[in-house]
Length: 81
Image (tube, rainbow, N blue to C red; front, side, top):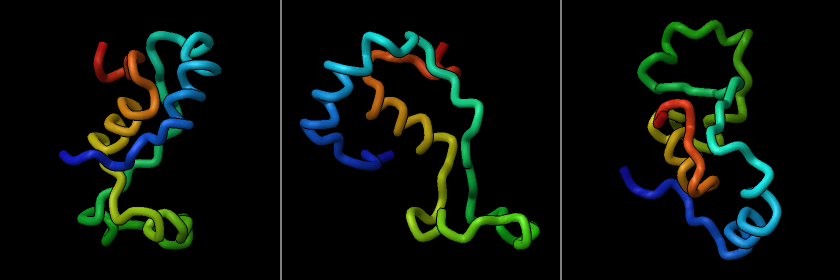
């Protein structure tokens, strides 16, 4: 898997200076949006928001966890105990 986005210097500085020390060592996201293109055929369109595909075609669990790794270095997600 390639890198999903580039963390900028300002992102790293803000995380190190303002967030890292106040966040717990283990992060658990209780509200995640995961979607796969191959599963779209069975979706009730009346219950789906339309903007996510404008941002990215799919949001896999692996991509979601990679975002955590990039955004919160040194922290663990629920999947990497």
